[in-house]
Length: 105
Image (spheres, helix red, strand yellow):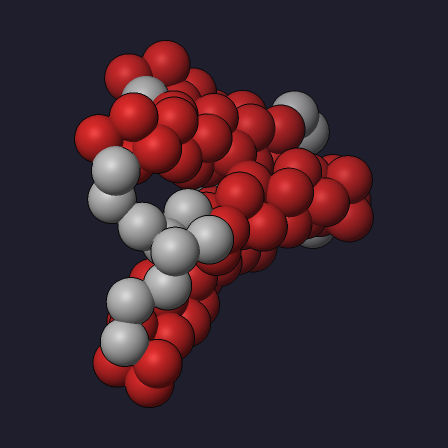
């Protein structure tokens, strides 16, 4: 999880350093960091026994797909998209927990 945070911070630094132009490669750092963080969180939750984990696994896969799609976007879009993805994931996870009780997947 810490490695994911470091990758995200490096991606943010890269985007901020290239405000005027396109920050090529920053989306890989940002999305890869988000994916690595989510997978680390999934493994931590799995060991501890906290569920659900499926939403976060799907989120890690979607983050990597965003890296493929978002390589041509500008820096602000590259910075905002992984953040928006995390907000959507947490919202989905909260609604699933409220709607059907506990999810064991």
